[in-house]
Amino acid sequence: EGVTLAKGANFLISLPILICFIETSWKYAFGFIPVFWTYNLFENIDNVNSIILNFSIGLLIHILYILLLTKLFKKRVYN
Image 1 (cartoon, rainbow, N blue to C red):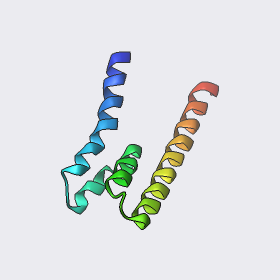
Image 2: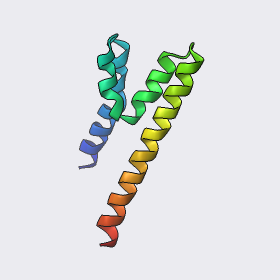
Image 3: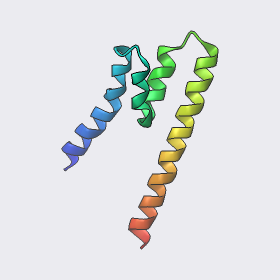
């Protein structure tokens, strides 16, 4: 089970690398993956406004995932 979980996690982490090959707005379909915004931030490192926007959206996505997963954890463990 652990190996399968690790493979799935590695797939989700490496999936946003595809944004380097997708030049249209379709790349934002990967926006639900938290590390997408980190990759996108480094892809657009020369634009200060883009850095601030990508960092803010990435931080928001990470916080939402943390809150969601914390809620699910508490529901499973304490109920």
